[in-house]
Amino acid sequence: MKTNADIFAAFFRVGILGFGGGPSSIPLFHREAVKKYKWMTDDEFGDTLALGNTMPGPIATKMAGYIGYRVNGITGCLVALLASVVPTVLLMILLLGVLQQFKNLEWVNNMSAAVVPVVGVMLAVMTWDFLKKSGESLGWKRAVVLTIVFAVLLEVLHIHPAVLIVGILLIVLLPFKKRGGTM
Image (cartoon, rainbow, N blue to C red; front, side):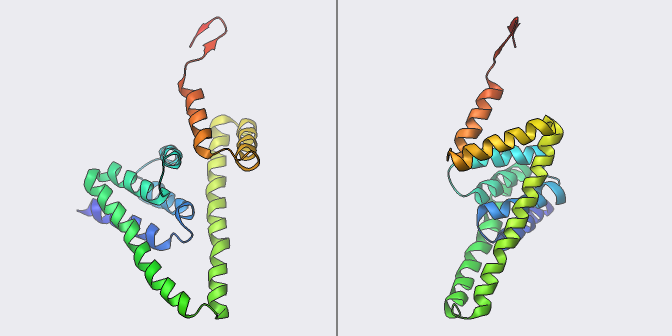
């Protein structure tokens, strides 16, 4: 019962604080699953995030469902999904009603605009954490070069992230011949 309560609390916080959609809630998922409850390591979280991004649908529900399942099976999955979705639905109904009534007031517009830099900082901190981890495991030179290459592929050539992730998986998982023998 305590496990389900922890799952509910963690994903309720993510659901209630995850302004800006799924991508902006990823740092919150990381904080709850890796740092606070230690349900998974940074590497496992990164793998889960990468795999979740290759599949269709909202990333927040995929992350919640998988992490909940991993922690406490089907029950954990259902608890995590409910906890992450219900606050969003309730807040959306409530806040959209309020914003609609007061949409012409300056403080409402300022409040909406103030959320954007906060989400940007959260994503930048998470990106820096992933870059540091890549630098430690791959070496800084290789990590920076790969980051630049993938940024160009994503932003300049507009290649879908799923294609890049599948490509990396194929490179890593398929055996390649080395000079003088096989792997």
